[in-house]
Image 1 (tube, helix red, strand yellow):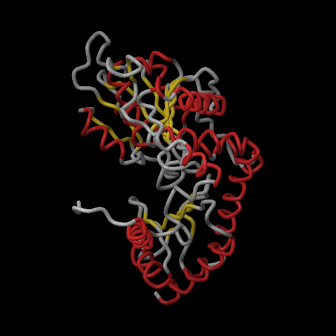
Image 2 (tube, one colour; image 1 turned 90 degrees about the vertical axis):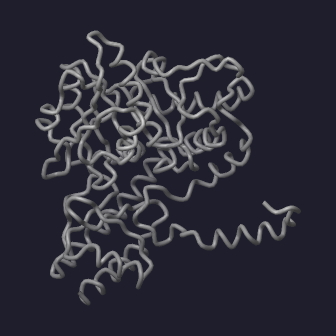
Image 3 (cartoon, rainbow, N blue to C red; image 1 turned 135 degrees about the vertical axis):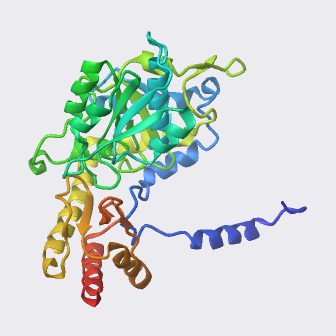
Length: 390
């Protein structure tokens, strides 16, 4: 820190210089986040000082958070669901597993070495869970459609398993695990079932039913689902950091409580202490403003981009590129030769930001609201150029 302060002009000059080095979303096809809705931005600014870690001081902001949880509960078929706003899917997943562990290790006979069973496609946040909580994370194999193999999951369950995890819109392939089948396992074994719907939670409820080739039940309408992670800062168009963790019953949230004697509330069930009231206000504002109709339009737009990309890829079949699988949501994976090399050229020569899946390696593209139909045309042209050169 300098001895004397800089002028506002100098500060904003430095800020603009730093901002200029950031990537805007124009040619980003790898991110599950996007530019927030303008009403979310304005609401966020209004509540910058609000701290949801000390609820008694910010009761108005807390009322907005409670309303967000109620709206999300209704969306996910559990009007009486409880929970709170998190920083995103990683925190939500950590807290869900923490609840599994806390409940499981208090059962008789006592569980000394708890484990959870997740799909091999589960988000890397579960690796953080293993490290932080001392819970063994067992990864079940996937089917040819990149959904969790139920028989593999069942074989990994033992007497020290405290919970199962299913993914609704997995990060790499956009697939939805067979949550109903996982639920049957959870109910039979009396296990906690957490659904990571960080991305899919604001997509699946709003997809045009006529576009669905099969039903994908994933939320509290499935009897065995205990908790759900959902991120408004992704397809919910809220500001970062806006995540949410919902539990079917209050006792699951209660098992996370710690005493906070010097605050205006005496207990706290959240992972972080100080929490952003601005994110809660932004989420409240955009959900109230858009309503279900607005989110249906948002998802329809992204799915139209998805189908446009799929159609264009099929027209490039002679260049040895094809869909790895039919997309369920607005995530497309492409099988082709040398995906890492193709990705590198698309970035260096044309400025496209794309990611690659792990097993098998394929190009992964996420079609978000910041992308336009014209962007898809340009990307397909650039992809064709690269494939012809190779």
